[in-house]
Image (tube, rainbow over all chains, first blue to last red; front, side):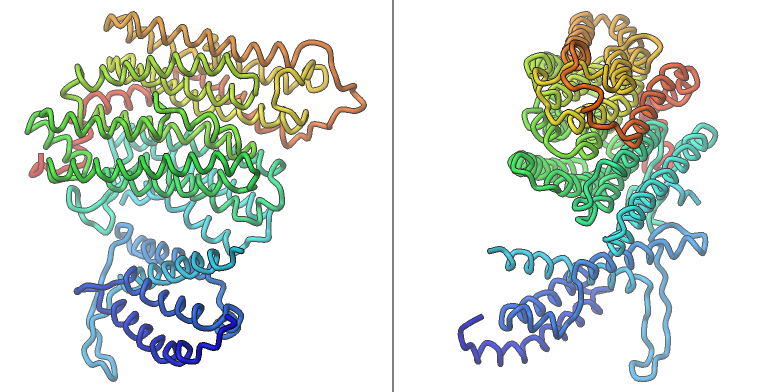
Length: 140
Length: 495
């Protein structure tokens, strides 16, 4: 981007952090309240898109050396494998389970296997959305 | 645990995703895909035999029983189609091994084919209509990619038509599902069947069923086939073989499922509409097949004729006719793959698709010529080959129910099929050779082996019809007695 857009760049630095935090919050809260992997993933992706918009593609790619095509493939892989996990215990595909654990800082926390599945979805959404935006922006 | 029902959909997805990471390894990708599809075919054989002894199998995702959760239901009809499509895919992939460009392979050709098959198999096995929609979309998205891979001008032009028509029809599909859910409050096939039978199929439900009919007609190429010849004839060989063999069959499957399991109470309306559409499809397809001089277009119009033929079976809906239609469906998947592979090979060898520019190919490539001859006889329905059984059973059904007009047009279309194929055979294979033996493009064995395998398969289905008929009649039995399907899926409380 040729124009000197100091304001956009400065604001983006702060806002990206807020968006990322909000995305992770949505992702984690999705189990019992609105949110989840898909919505969280979209919000996370919007943070990346904002970075690509305010800085140029090269800078961001240097800072975040991730192949987003492979990221989305990895997400699908994670989701499918988490669905196949229960088969090892003789249960149905996509069967979920959860339990309560005492973690150091959080105290009593509910951990569910659905989180792995949701993580897969979130990664897929991030990968696909960023990939689409990048492909369109590369067009002459 | 019936988790093996998942294999036809999950294994291709898993393999497809893994292959994305192995983008540059062409041979490895090809052989992995072939191995995966062979495993799927083996699983389908296992399932098919398990169904004969244990009845219809079911897997509930996450342990949520129907009608609340989503499930895969494997009955003989679905698994027969899964088996045939997997076998056909293995053979098409063998052809892809030699005929696909390096450039195409690095642009995710194999993963996309695997996703396409996952969508197709998922559609066959899905136990509720929304999941059917999702699997349809998986299949369609992959087909958009496959259609445009290669990026020739002709492909992109056809892709615009194909993508827009399918987006519109998917949108109709979604609206029809919403109507149906609004009317009866469920989306599970078995539960739908129970609810529709309880309430009686009122005019409102019949109207909804016609919206579904339009959607599936667009996908299957029943009457609404205007997009089909162009888009099936433009992509590379293997892609068009997969399209011609498999894609329309999913629409046909969905129509059989909907109009035998759910909307079977008003045949005077729905089945008569299907009959009229089938007749018009047969006539239109026949005209198209004899009018064109481009061999790819002729093959594509033959797909249309087959769709019309199979759906006359659904319109007649006697046990014989349904069995005939299922037989013909299986036969058509095999023989259309064969036809498209042969035609693609001819075009690769001669560099043209116009009938007038070829002559005497059988002198140069005798085995190819005779393979085409067998494909032609099989398409026309000559006795020892696979097309015969389906045609005889369907004709019996038509005579039993007194549908003589349907029968006459369905059998008449066979003559047009034969004529259009003879036109290719006479002009391209017979006559003076244009190219001398020394100048001819060598025919690589990799091109020929898949074609010969399919020839063997079409002869095998024809000769082994006796062995196959137990499975087919079980499939027809399930289709004609919805209660069998309902008992397998729902517990007593919901019936």
